[in-house]
Image 1: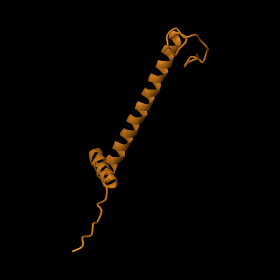
Image 2 (image 1 turned 180 degrees about the vertical axis):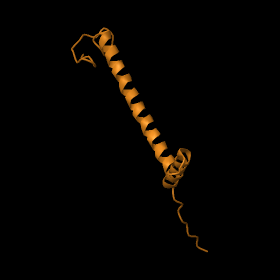
Image 3 (image 1 turned 135 degrees about the horizontal axis):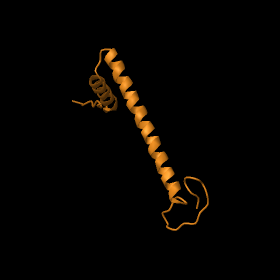
Image 4 (image 1 turned 45 degrees about the vertical axis):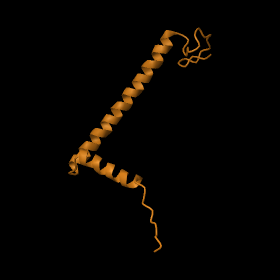
Length: 87
């Protein structure tokens, strides 16, 4: 089996083991946390920029979100089919 962090070959002690030693496990999970934190910061920054631009353009963020929701519903709403009745 290969360690998910360092790639070194190791013998499994337990069937669910993924790392060769606890340090590799800790390093792997710390890196995952770091990446998630960076993504969350980028998303928060993007939301802040969007809110600032909306404010500058005279829109509120809530109105913009509502209008996007309305557009999405209209696009996703199935169109009614026309049925002709023979009289």
